[in-house]
Length: 364
Length: 251
Image 1 (tube, rainbow over the protein chains, first blue to last red):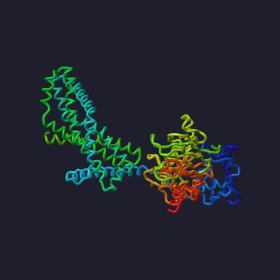
Image 2: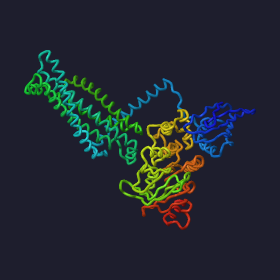
Image 3: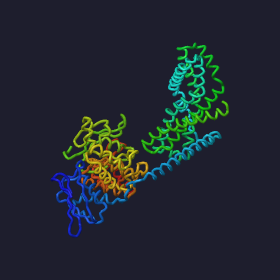
Image 4: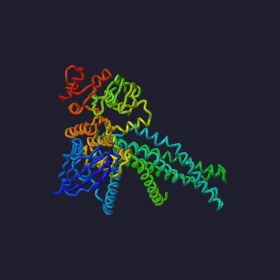
């Protein structure tokens, strides 16, 4: 039972001889006021409002929250307009929709099932993408070729400045670190071998793949995620067009073609970056270039190109996949972009390790 | 303008960019009344509602809401007035990453000093009013268009606004929900004196709820009639208005 001075909202409970709880409400009930707590026992309640001075929707909300489960609720003594507002809400069903508490095991189980189905969806998407490529090769796929041309530009040509900058700095850093160590054994001339071999076999492809993840994957995840939100992908399905073929295949194809070219570009820029440091130190340009040309073999060049094709595919696929399964909300699109970059980079590094083992086995 | 008028416009011109789609619009609405804006599709009903509600600047003329000229009012005053209004947009405009309950709680948390528990019970009540007591913890992507519409109405009512603007509130609702919505609008007006401005094509619903109706004529680029909706069914109205109401009622 609670009481408050006139003006503030209050509720008082009296129990009659027959067990009926009479709740007297009064004062001024506004959205900003602190509403009185009430505990009512029994299943017969009568509400009276003799001392009520003013109210807004806070009062019907309070009545609804506290008395919705009372079996015999008598609101007849309330003003008609207040009664009607409570009754309007009561017309809805009162199923308790509060989430039940879940234990650790249930959480763990749910996580396991969701992770499993997420991997399942990923493999399904890879399968559909592969099918899309095969259908494209036999000329049966509906491909948005205007997207393909646009993506050659945005994923390829537009990425040249950032690829050049990062490639140059990578070569420069490697040469700087290498020079310090090689100077200890008097073999500074081999810094050219170090930089050119590392850029050709490894860093050119890896850096370009990571740039593609940060730049292109996230863009694709956002684009396709937004299309998911606005049901554009549903509209494509309704038109009998496979969204993976129409949207994902041209993007993946464009990036898979452009990343190797960018990787080769990054390799040369990186070798140049190394040359700047090497020549500022102990080597002449001629020495550096002679050593670099000796170090770069066709095999190592091929290794770099094969890797960059795979990295390009992974970066574009990660973006398209995460975009296509994005939740239909602004938050979902953001999450898709983030997870596309994470998924792409993780897969690129894993596949790089895988390539190292394979190439070692085949003596490449 | 009468002292009891909560909303007025005089010589109002509305449009997109610099393109005028309606002009010479003059109307005034007393507090606690329900105004319906009707007309053929694409005639500028929603644009007029947005201008009346202060969301868009008109291309000419003036609008006043609660006695304040929204176009000349400073930012804070304008914000203060807008806080006393509620809007339901055509696409519901629910925040997609929040549950329905959180969508309703959001303006309450921003503007009310009430404790969390009370905000929660207020939100649950508003959702129950529109028949969504069972869907409080769902995301907008998990509900139907009609349910999203009703959740949008609950959010528009969150702060007990003095004026509610509803853009096609019954579009996508089944006849029972549509009838419930009419009842809700009438009860809100009765209980709190809420003024309602709605855009609708549902003539039976307009005849049931609205006190005033404005018909926008795209051919002349201005309003063809303004008055009680039932009068639009009577002889003496512009033929276009009479035909629109009679045909829609027949449908």
